[in-house]
Image 1 (cartoon, rainbow, N blue to C red):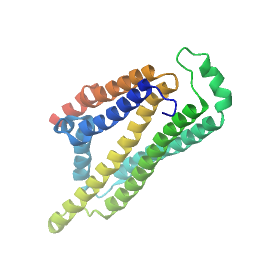
Image 2: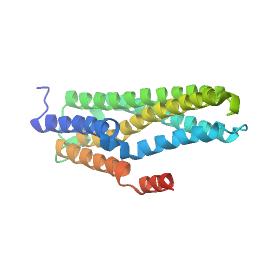
Image 3: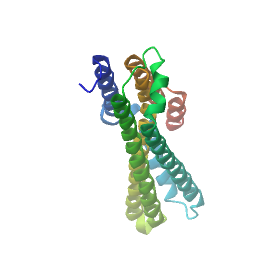
Length: 229
């Protein structure tokens, strides 16, 4: 069907399973509570706990600006990637002869276009995640500005507002992480343009790297070490 081989379908199924499986492991499973993302979420709440007692919040606004700038950069990069993919879609006649010379690179114009469309879908997804994350960081900045300085007469109000800001920060970070996840898996997807076996190998490699960064990296060790201190 459509000219794809059984290996192509198996590789695509493995790619989708890896993506959703990683999502479930990091965000839905009990093991995900020990991931680097979850540890950093604890620091988001601790940040707001410290922020609520500060009258001068220049440090906090500087951190917010850094978070928004990084998110805006990735959103812009996603748009550039989408433009590049659309250019690939129009250059099938020039690219196909190059792939025809590769041992496993034989493909048809229809297959090429379908694969490129799949890559475009990944980058569009990433753009929506980064754009929404940027919007959420803006919302968080507004909530942060509404958090009163902690005093004896507003203790409950200030802590509730600070927790709302922390929760908005965590949600924005979650969508940012999903956008970056799409970028990482897009690198694995590129292997499909060469062949199904490389596609599966690249997916497995990206999955291992991402899993290791979340659960076995030196960054996690550093974050947990500081958290335990």
